Image (cartoon, rainbow, N blue to C red):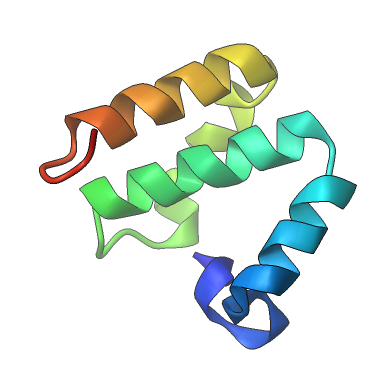
Length: 75
């Protein structure tokens, strides 16, 4: 969600930041992005449960990949 605002709107800045962030934060961000695609009108409070899912980065990343794969137009 934040990837489209401020300095994070620049793809190059996101790529540099991705190299600096721990895996669990990247997995959490990816999961939140996919959940936002499923429920575009959801606010942060409605997605708070995703923070608990991020306790296992591998599982969180797997869930995010699954959700991305199930979206129309994604592979």
